[in-house]
Structures are given as structure tokens and as C-alpha cells.
Amino acid sequence: MEALVTYEFAVGLAIGKILIGAALASRLFRSLVLASFAAGVIYTYVMRGVGGLLKIATLLQTDAMAHPKFGYGVAVGALTVAFVGFALRNGRSA
Image (cartoon, rainbow, N blue to C red; front, side, top):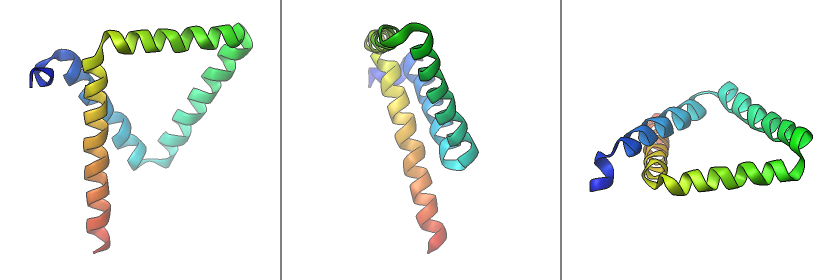
């Protein structure tokens, strides 16, 4: 229960809800996000090589482990929006 009252969890919850909500609502948003991630990976590979990609992956993993409550918040936010979106889609077809 203490995880629900931290600032990190609240911020993660908001970010998860925004990202998943936008992804469910807009095909354009999904396309832009995927294109941005792909461009970032390609740019990093071209400029830094495989070592740069591994360094970024290690940095992200280290940062995620340093703030686990933020990750829990993102996961809960994403699941909440996904569940509500799924429920609304099934409700419309009935």
C-alpha cells in the first residue's frame, strides 16, 4: 500500500495512462511513436555503433532498477487504460 502514495508511483501512473490511452485512441500516434523509436535506434547505431546501443540499454536498465515504484506506476496505469479500453470496445458492440 505504501507504493501507492509515492511521487514516483503517481508520475508513472500518469505517464502510463497517457501513453496507452493515446496509443489506443490514435493510429497516427502509434505510427509516430514507432517511427521515433526506430529513428532513435538507427541514429544511435550509426553514430555510436553497437557499443552505444548497449550503453543506452544498460543506462535504462540501471535507471529502472533505481526507481522501481515509477515502473510499477507505469505498469498499473497502462493496465488500467488497457482494461477500460477493452471494456468500452466490448460494450459498444453489444
